[in-house]
Length: 468
Image 1 (cartoon, helix red, strand yellow):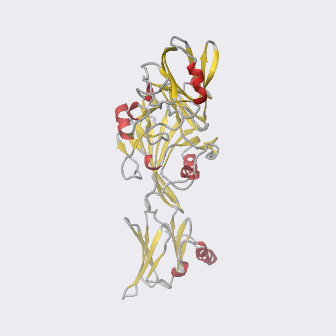
Image 2 (cartoon, one colour; image 1 turned 90 degrees about the vertical axis):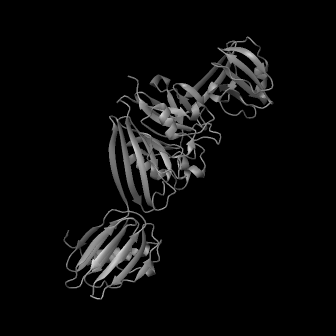
């Protein structure tokens, strides 16, 4: 393909710009080759009658430039050290022909050639995004991206779910309990899910770190007022979520509740429900009260109570012991736990905490410091999982592979947020990532987990058929 040739000064500027490519040993490269952050540019002056042809190979990607004349100023070999371009090799034949080989670290799109009688130029893009999509079911679209920027390549998988098309997005606990671990693929199978991704952060024992609600039952309370996603049959919402817990007795507020289904700390009052297990597993330094249908049925001064079916256990330590110690078997108590904001009127029955927030109103709004995240989440590139909401209330579930040099390097939170904008999200939140990042479609793992195999995680987000 031929274009009208631009003034030679344009090519001089491109060549001079090589000096700004600090990642390479500039002195070892020919002046004809400019390795820029977004592209590689080869500019060759042509002799009378000189013809050049470009061809490509893959795995590894090579760009081969053959000419019936020598190329001036080319070294036999040069190690480039660029994130994309690895090496240059040049040979000349006895018949006066020449071959230039540019070897790359990963697959890039084919370059664009433009030439006239005096100059030949080949521009190979290093920044690109190639997307393919397919319909999984009516209302569920799977997308796959190969993309790259100046930091390297990335592989992105995403699901777009139309909640108006009789699909529900629900939450699952590993092994259906607070303390558990299970592969996302196994959770998807046993729930009959058409697709799934990993969900919230979790402790080493599997307990979700942050708010978690399944089918209207609150499993764990929010942490640090972090961002959470509420899911319902007709839509989704993202906001910061807080927690207020109260214990009432004889029509009066007795004391506040510190948390739900987690280890009891100093001077705390914790509520334990069946979701936690059969026992509270607390130490002897607390005081516990077993409650069924709002009535105190047992006092347990030494802790580690049995959690009754359909009931709960109140467990107090330190300053909170006095409030439980004054209760007697047969007393009526009321446990009131509310989330702020209260999404129940919106039909929200699934809530998952994560964070930090990525987007608000279609623009980047990364709230990591305010939500007390540490640098292992906030800094650097990593495999990522995210959830987003589009303007027409479609839900996006997104995974980015990472920690795989020359295949997928992962993304920063800023890059992840910009990716969600590209995909049409107005609101978005980060989820657990790293080796946990997993996407399942029709029982197949479609991403490349950075551990080299699918990791057992504590919970998952699943896409299941809605109620008829």
